[in-house]
Image 1 (cartoon, rainbow, N blue to C red):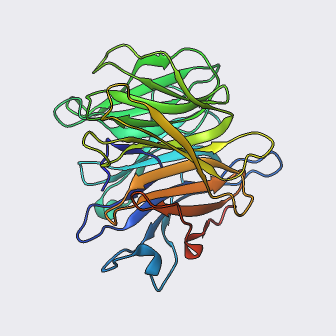
Image 2: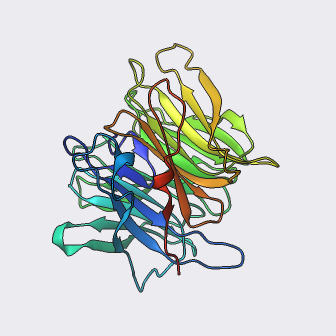
Length: 326
């Protein structure tokens, strides 16, 4: 099962036995001709199941819609973690650039928004790192005017949000995925100037590398995790291709057991419905699968794909998630 530092995105699995429920934070998209409001927490009941797609309900359940007079929506995107405080925690980017933190705190429900000390120009990546005694919160987000911004919350000293040096000062970034790898680094995959790129930070407060291009002609926000495959744990990336025939999704992986760290892919899937995607999330579930969720381009519906080790990607027909956007 994934952890707060090996994955970022808007879907996760709770830590429970034999299987935890899946949780998602869905932000309705902004379209050119229609402004869709909505920031909704949904969940999928995995209790007692050996296969989540065999659920007799076959439905996502709406837990709560977050409403705030301070930030009514629409949203550029959300990111969700299960922190070691025991809370679901979300960071969301508002269409006016506001970046805010919410937390689901016991019987008190969703609390927030708490503003972060800087604006956003796209959907955020959010993790809890292993830096500090408690584990800091880390957010990286596209920056207005180009480049990326990095914010962190010092969970050992007052739980205050701070701004860190920029991971990148240039490039038009449409979205990023972030992990704290078992190499000890923050590692990031994003779409910069239409290219799928990888950068990493050399330890806490270290310098960020120059972007390494994994593939060209991509859009939106990619998904990025460190899986349990291989001895070290491979990096897994799923993104949305761009271009004249930009349908389906593409999977890449990095062999972290090889001294040269080669990337492999693309392994294409999800093109049967001729659908264009733009916002992708992924985690490795306790069912032994990679689970991928992808929102259609300027749509309020999400497709669910899954793959077992060394097996092809499949899409359960029962897993379509359609949000009620207003």
